[in-house]
Image (cartoon, rainbow, N blue to C red; front, side, top):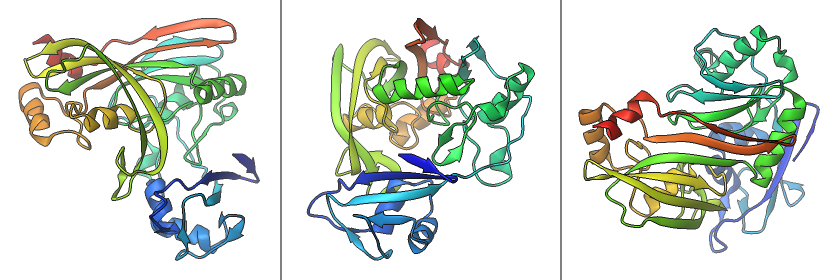
Length: 322
């Protein structure tokens, strides 16, 4: 990936089934669900997307092994600093650790409402009060500027989030993510009683070819290897199992997809879970989101080892306290 003149250029090799061909706009629409098909078609018409070094039309078929190059325009949003509650559990001159609530968007989205009341808005306010200039925290995720954000996050999961406070820390932390030297541990409550004490899942995960908002292990688009370790911690209500989960790779929806693929989806997961079990949890425990919490982070930065843990949010405690 390289950047120039407000554009970031990325390239990748098509890893679709060798027997299957797709229109490039259909393929890219599934691969990048945050971009509409009309937006991608316009990029093709403007010559911002090429295949094997040559421009092509939106009707062109792509095949396994084709190399696609895309020039993404970096979108700049006018962001507002907002005085919002922010659970900062650690902070120094280089980074902060925030225990994010579920239900709050991490990144602003297009539109007037999407640019307000997000984690980024809160960070801009708190960093300003601490004397940190927000314009010194460049970060780009999904080709949109995200001040201070080091990694992508699900809206409906509570998380420990790393926030970089300067360019030096941002570069070092993103390099550690790329090299997978940051250990992130989750707690997940799943349907049914899992008999195994410990187990490991390794599979390829990519976009679902039939639902661009979902990931899948079955014939995915542009699959990437995903590795997850699980440890059985306790049983609750004779129908749920609490798992400790270690991510060995960081793929979109990795934990949720892996657990669903073996028949133990996370309670409250509206995308990959069982609606009947989700409804029971809503009615009995008032759970309105997936029972998934990133509670521990471990890494070394500039020669110092760090371990951070965050307590469960109140809505998750209800299911394991009764």
